[in-house]
Length: 145
Image (cartoon, one colour):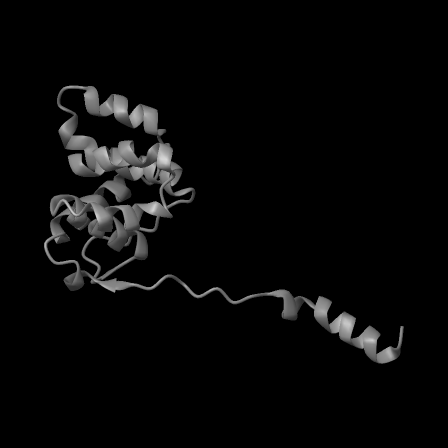
């Protein structure tokens, strides 16, 4: 191996070269989520309450929906189950923040597509983020909020 080839190989293995900069997900102004601001605030408050609580499985969430009087806590149940549905913990901003995180905007757009009965948009929004086996239960929870 020549000295030049060895230098090139070492340069490829250098830690600074291997690190990729990952851009943060884009933030969306709350005004762009017209009509869903009330639901967004409800989810943000539920996320604040559920932050210290344990996460919930999707089966437990469906069982909670079957209980009488469960309508008041559906937002908190949805927030607790999102980590399982998305495969990572979602990002929620504080109540009253003027920008919405990618996860918040995605939830609002899913809810708007549900309300408009736009199945194509809903399939596009949930297609890559929600596993097909979890999709129906997730959409039931989102509809109940």
